[in-house]
Figure 1: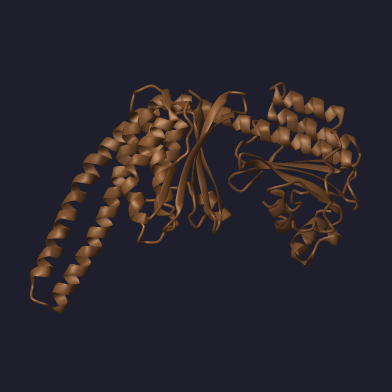
Figure 2: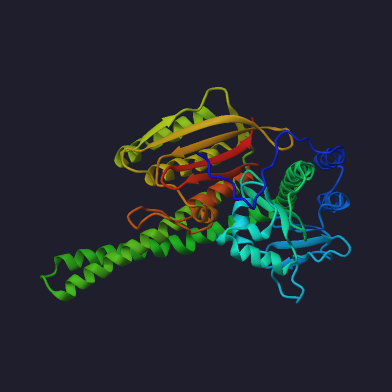
Length: 437
């Protein structure tokens, strides 16, 4: 049975259509007639014109505004702007000039996944005490808020509020649902265009720098590391041959530590070199059969799967193809399947699947999913899973912490995306989206 909605929060009706003005505005945004910043201006004007809202607050995260003059820069990645009706006491930007804003920990947690319509701050439960205090300090009694996100990526947030408590009209909530979704789609498209423009601008230079860097790494690190490993093995062997004693035991133990650390560092170097060769390759993208690529990867992981007691199932249907570099696609899938095996439980299962999708611009794409039955990741862990050198496995599980970030780099080079969903205690689903081939 679903938990009851707190008395302070209002249900959104599903049978109320948005207004004609909201529908027209969302259409102009989705067709590219309006820029995202122009849409922000018109969305705020739409809500303030109705007289029900006294303030509209927009926060942008991944995509900063082009004209940054009217926006307040908070921290490293947040740009905030408010539009306030004349005479309203509501505000979200601090009046003392400090760099802070509403945090609303109780409401914000809900607003990540759904639209939150608060009717009266004084009706918030005890766990919403911080929210109640913040709203009171900002002259706000009722607020509607949600995160602007697409495919689990948050691009900002949109809030409308007023100083008088009471229910929100279902018409306003219907308009809010439509316009927040349109803004999220517009921000996602703008972010993708920005990434593509930047990638094209620096692509050739980056490839040259990468080739130089990885060549230097290969020469300057691999050779001395091999020497260190050789001497560590020699010391360990000599210590073992000495008569039993405390010094020989200490030498053997220390040599083992040096050997372990050196081998780990060599694994890091090999990961970098392998990815560098993939990124620096001049070959073009081709139409790659997904089922065939997955079959190769599953075959390569037969022995590790048997060792860990994990069943790997290839459920990719025939007939799906993607536009990618074959070696790069197999490298990404190797990382995802390998992780799903070693981070699984004994007797667990890994299922590889694929299905066609339609991208935000209407272009055909294919998503390949790797689902495991491991322990799963929390929301906090998932947000940092693609950062370099971040690992959540114990010391007994080998790894460098570079596999996922490097796999994401390879996927993005081919116009793809890499992401994940996870539930603690139930397992994870890692996926890669690529243009259909």
